[in-house]
Amino acid sequence: MTAANDGKGGRRGRGGEDRRVPEIIRGKAYLDPRYNPAFQEFFGSEDALVDFLNAVLRLEGDGKIRTLTFRLEEPLRFRVPARATSFFDIRATTVDGKAVDVEMQRADHHAFVERTLLYNAFLTVKAKTESAARLAASGADRTERAYRRYELPEIVSVWLCDFDL
Image (cartoon, rainbow, N blue to C red; front, side, top):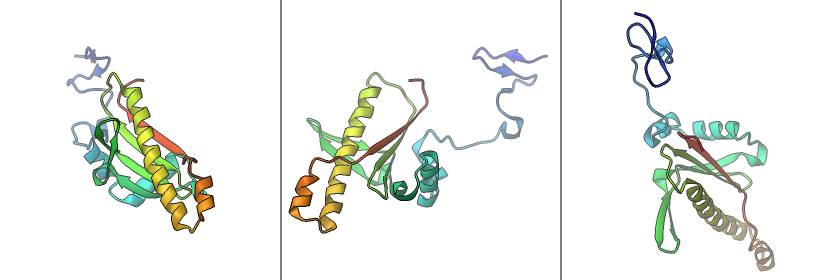
């Protein structure tokens, strides 16, 4: 028996194994990083995830991520126009105040682009609130706070999708 097409674009070997999967990992169980618990298991320490994101996003110096929050730790609640709760998979803040959102999305849906825009809006509001609190805590006077009232922090969103856009 020779390798045959499996009907899904892959190739099957003589024993029916998928020839696209390297032999060294065939038949072994692995965590699927497309699921939040596995993704969080890969980056079980904050340091590992911070290093990964700083490298992937090429963040250096004051642009580096300083804090990190997994989605299960912090729901964000907004009224849009009704009360809504969003869970960011990973939310981070850089040393210079830039807000970073990393999302793992397995399923496509009809309003995916709108969802990304809504998440960016939520992240912008959250980041603005935190930025205003940092400015007040820094001892900035009322005039300085009023001057910066409408300045928005920079937002970076990374969507890891398991489908074509």
